[in-house]
Structures are given as structure tokens and as C-alpha cells.
Image (cartoon, rainbow, N blue to C red; front, side):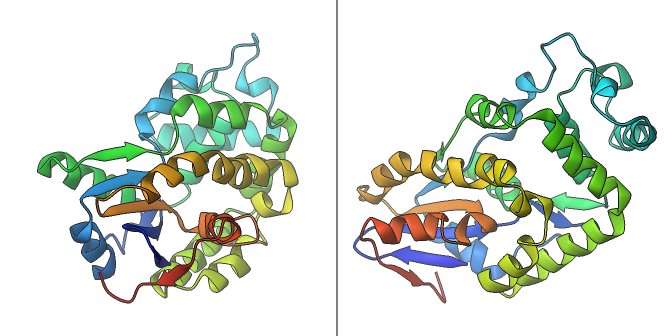
Length: 252
């Protein structure tokens, strides 16, 4: 889950965007990786996406979500501190993101902790994508597919929470194979349109920026969600296809 790219000053670490509230601390290998780096390259600046959450077609979220699930979603919004008038005009994918973040108590993930540290230390930080590019990909997924995913999670929230725990355990063990075994049973991996938007197309879109990083003379730590390093269309696989050799790091 932590690789160096041979012939470059780039190392790539797989992250968890949110951590269980009862396990909020990052493994030491991640802080060692952070300390090694001179530049930090992460997926995006989370607040950037906030301006793209609202529906623009004149509909409301309640018109997209089955009535029996709408009440549950409203409770989740309240629990997350999202004003009702704001939530009702969110796009389905925005509601899905909020719902997943509210399924169980979470602590700040890798990127949030790293970005806070980098800001205080003045460490140069760069992004692989913008909020606009993420929103554009999610906007291309038909709302009914997003809502279908949402309702499946709402119908079995305990299963969703269990999978998140299993993903976290695989991440702690630094086992992409263990994470992939869990992930491929999730709605994201089982629906081609969702997987394309959330993983495959983003991986491809990141490659030009990664190629620039690979030419840098500075120690550059690339931090992406761990699932972006799993599977045949992963960042790991794309770099291998371009002739790069990745070696697992055991220490920073």
C-alpha cells in the first residue's frame, strides 16, 4: 500500500479518506512517508466540490429518492448537521456522499491530517483533480444508478458499516488484495457506470499530473485512496503499463 517508483523521486501511498472514530491515528509508516516528502500530491481539496452539490434541473432530492427512504435520508442529514433546506436541493450523489459519511462515527482521514500538517509547516501541496472535474464525472452517472446504490445501503446499513471496517483492516494490514476482496462486493464495483466515475476515469485523468511528478527532482509523496491502487485499471496498473516499476516500501 506504499510504493516507490523506480528511477524517480516519487512514492505512492494508499489512503483511507475517513477513519473509524475509535481508530483515528495514522500508522507510523504514513507519517514516515510524509516526513520523507518535500512535496505532497493528493486527490483534491475537499471544500472545492461544495459549490457543485446542488441540483440545477429544477427538481428536488425528494423527487429522486423513493418515499420510504426519504425519511431515513432526512434523519441522516440532521445527524450530519446539514440544514434541511440545503439538503433538499442536493444532487443524489451529494446526498450519497453525506450519507456514507454519517453511517457511523468517523475521524479525519489521511488527507485531512496531512493537509493540516502541510499547511502549518508550509510544505508545498498539489492536487490531482479539481472539485469541478469530480462533479463532472459524477454528474454523468444516471441519478437512478446513484439512488439505487443509496437505497441498497439504507436497506442494509450494518452491512455497509461492516465492509468499511473490513476495508480499514485490510488497509492497516497494507493488503491491497484484502481490500479488493471486500470492495468488489460493494455497489460501486458491481456497477460499471459507478466504477468508471469513481475510480477508472479518475485514474486515467490523473496520469498527466503523475507523469509530471515523476520528472520532479524533489521527493514527492502521492496520496490516493487505497482502492485506486487495486485492480487491473488502477494507478498501479497504469504506471506498470507505461513501463514504470513499482517497488513496495517497507520504511520511509
